[in-house]
Amino acid sequence: MKNMLRITRDLLLTALILLFLGLVVVRLEGPQEAMSGRARVVDGDTLVLDGKRVRLVGIDAPELRQVCQREQGDWPCGIEAKLHLAALIGDAQTTCDADGSDKYGRLLAVCRVSNRDLNAAMVDGGYAIAFGDYEVEEAVARHKRLGLWAGTFDAPRTWRQTHGGMDEMPHIPEGWLGTAISRISDWVGNAVSMLWTE
Image (cartoon, rainbow, N blue to C red):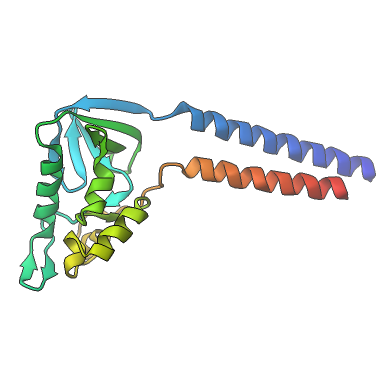
């Protein structure tokens, strides 16, 4: 019986180590695609770059037809979000590091202009909300009552659901794999120590 327990323990440990190494290899591969050039702004969180649709990962901006509320009344927040992103980009070269795509075939990417993270800038200015990442930037914009936070609005995902738009889940934040590896490593360490003490 003791021999069977030792074999089971060794097999479990081997499987966990292989899983851990596989996750490390995936993490080291980095972004799937890097692209650069003149971007065309589609809306507050979508660009076309090198002929490919790019969704700014980790954020969610109001839809073009979405209207929000401010003290003065209706505010075309969807159009304003698009204009704000266009102003951030201007005529500058845009660089995007894509890491996967969403269910609509758009590349999920962090995009930059002159080393400025456009995803973070949209949330920091209050023109988009955190959607799997950028919670710190959202907290700052909310505290300063910038952009969307200066009035009331439906979260873009809620607005899409009630107006027949494309639905999507919050994006998995960059660094999720590192967090998963850390948790698995802790779990493996605990499992090994429990098996060794038996």
